[in-house]
Length: 101
Length: 457
Image (tube, helix red, strand yellow):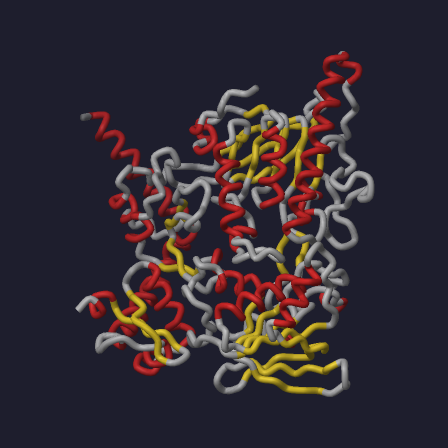
């Protein structure tokens, strides 16, 4: 039991030291994450009504199309977005929960 | 002749004692892997040191090889696996060689630093559950930033070893990965670890880099969204590519008109690169053929100064491309701009009639050249030649020897070459290293005075 407590204390101290060493990069990543979450919220809102192409999502969200493509690509990789077919030269994308309904 | 290395030693050098091997191979691309396998198959003990988290080099990123159009991954992955499982090879990833010194016995001592994965590699199963819970998406360098990855990730789907790594510079230290890991493999306590490798021979296979996409400002690379480099197109063509399709980066449109601009980083005095990179013509033709197959309705144009198809079967490959309907325009591209739809507009002077033409495409690919990779001077005392690649004192009779006994260079570390030539040269370096090792053994057997003098490195 004492050993467990000592190990936990050592781990806490180690993480504290690591956080201190990397405080600048952690802060930078935190800002990036906040911005990313906001963009994802806007993209998800634009896709709420159904599947869309990148230019359609960009038009609905007000975000640049290349930025939308990057985020949709990331969301597709991690199973948050799925491809639902084509519309001319473009593929259509839908939120996973929307596509499953 | 050798016992199998302890896998703990390969993957967790925090507990690794100093290694003693016959040959040290630096670099885990195709040339380094081939040299390591050729030496190990002859019974020599080999340590292969790779700075990245996976071996495979640039070749594993490619779609297909020319002129056979064999799948790159299908060729490279078995070699990666063979390296990882070979009884005579100790694989050391995330490692940098920091110094190389003669050891007084005719061989060398390499000081190697292993950078932490922050993962217990023995425990990690590569399940990627950690990656799925990581909150931050980052541009994936493996996909030339077109796709995303996370701060904790398995480097790519066929990575060897198939182990996660934490990019500590982008980690929030939120602990979600620790909670998600089913084997408690996340270990933030890891520190850089330095150890020594004793070796009698060294094979340097440190590879190359490509011309930066924005090197020629008039071509708009890095600024115009639909001007990409050829390595990016390789990722778009690969089945594991970022989009899963060939799409242009500005808006995800499937391109109907694609252009290649040749010599966009080679044979160009303004960039300080007077030499021919030897691969650009063939990879552009290969990509054009693959695009023809994937996008049958697309128009594909290659703007070129010369087409150089010197290898076995290469000229026929070029003729096949022409027969497939790929347009070859003999002319020098002066600049690339874009219209309001982000379509690149190429301004070219055609050599046949000397006219200036402007042509609009959906996507432009810059056939970037090969530049020297790591400078081998400071650590290995292998000085660069005029072109920046490793100097070879006798390239005709001894194409891998560096001038330091027992130190050899191979693959694109010695100059621009394609995959076929890299593999041939890797075999040559292994053969020269093996001959050197046998000479050393004979010398040792004959007595200490017979050990050849080794230059200070």
